[in-house]
Length: 320
Image (cartoon, rainbow, N blue to C red; front, side):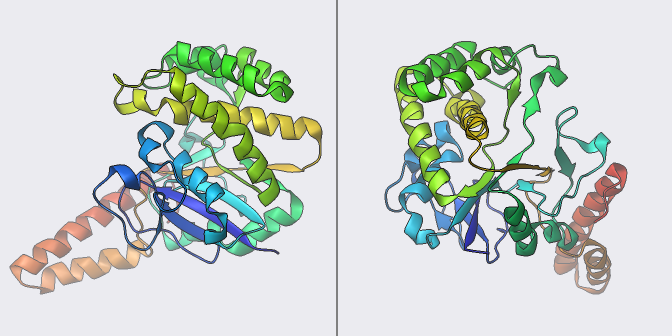
């Protein structure tokens, strides 16, 4: 298999996932004082890092597009989050652990060595030998009792205003006439792709960015964000999911690329990594008993933390 790089976006400091195909990147570097070690940074070279509060993980996507040679000029590129990952081996969790009703995103308590097996490069390569594009299964918001994407955006997504959706639709109609059919699907439909996550060939990735970022830039200029904060300030990141959906639906309609849908994970505990939880639990228990008071306290805290994670895993019936 030719070169594959999967970018993982981080905005919280934690141990990054890295491998021959996994590349962690810190987002919003231009608007934070702390730079994380052992990862890429989205404020180097041509970038929009200063827009991260509105564009969210898309500042990493823009950076990769404009600095493609810095990630090795791969033939395939993908994007995931530090807490959401494709399950490349096809693993699915229990239905009671789905993130959204009847969806294909499964909650897991933390990252363990067993979990990391789902992300092995051999499984990524196998999936790309069978398809050109990998996405999460499109989600029908009617499962959440929303009649349409527009209603869902304006009523159930935190901090979002329905007029933002209307601005997105009208702007996309004006700027991307060849996508009019798919944009009208968004305007009147209930199906969307989730999380701005994908794997696709280099040429299609560049085509996607050339479609996406001019529209987002125009939307950003039309919506006053000066009084927004928190989730409401992340409106560009939310709206981009709909435009990603339009792009994928367009690719599907053209029929030039084979698209495959994969299940996805949602790590509940801030991307926490405990490779061998059962062994570590015993290790920290023994260390807490054997060490002096000050050091013992540190190990006791670690023991309790892992014990609580294992309790959560047991309650969810997740093997770790």
